[in-house]
Image 1: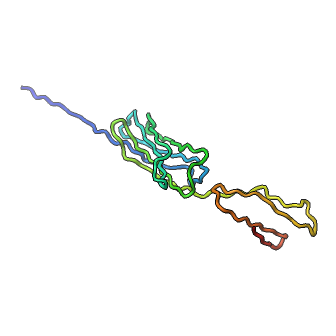
Image 2: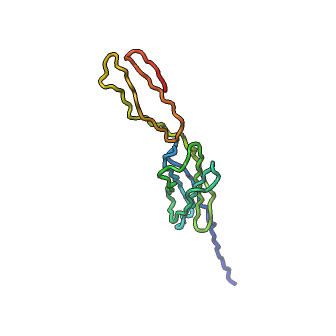
Image 3: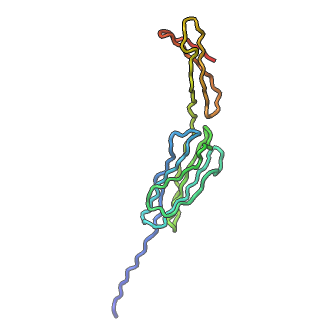
Amino acid sequence: LGTTNSIVSSSANTDPTVSQVFIEPSPADTKAQLNCTINVTDPDIETDLSANVSWYNLTAGSYVIFNSTVLNLTNSLLNSSLLNPSGIQARGESWNCTAIPNDGSVLGSPNSTALTIVNNVSYIGNVTIRPDPAYTNDTLNCTGYAYDYDLDTMTLTFEWWNRTTPVYFSS
């Protein structure tokens, strides 16, 4: 009798991974459009690599914005936008972006990051001093426009100088 040798080979499918998740811009205020960028890789170099990207408002406690699957990634970066051109997030809220990779056979482990929305800088503009020109003994009037995008209560302070000594008045 002859001897038959056979070699049986099998390879296990390796889980895809999300090695990076980051939210931009950082810091972000209430006017910012948030973008989540992920890096999905698979050692098996699958052709149908995808990722499910979800936005979660940790403060409100719900998925409220964006949940999508992006197909045909090739071990590359994916940018998933929180489509909020008018700014739907509020100051102090914490937003989370989570990505779950999929190679068509296996779901990988989720990876996520969070970002807390910061206060906007107030705007002051159109500051004028009247009369212009001013003369000795004229009463000067300073006016301006101020706006706070977060609608915080503002206190305006005017600072006057006579070239050598500051004089403070507030309203």
